[in-house]
Length: 109
Image (cartoon, rainbow, N blue to C red; front, side, top):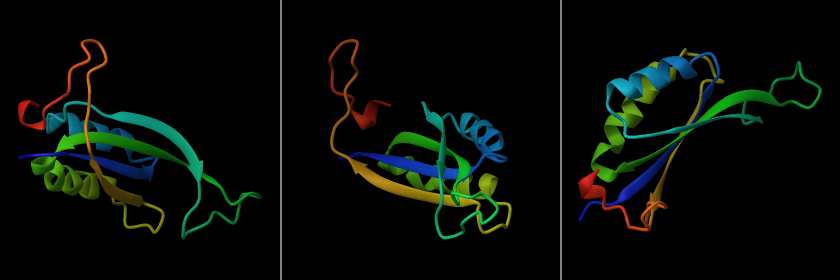
């Protein structure tokens, strides 16, 4: 049985529009994009608090589409700079539609 995965990508704000466009071309059923502030291995020493602004994309997908979508994000978000971001993949136990209270089956998406 197919299951859902959550793909979370933290990308540079300069590349987020390009990534969104590519994911729409691949018919990703939906995504959430939010502006976030933080730092990781490559801190911004020009800011007093070391923080920088990034975009976070969250996408819920059937497991069989994860590799395709991760590859698309890697290709479109990469600029060759150390602060290009990260991608994390996590399992999703269940998903529900709020409007009709029904469980979403990954094989029907």
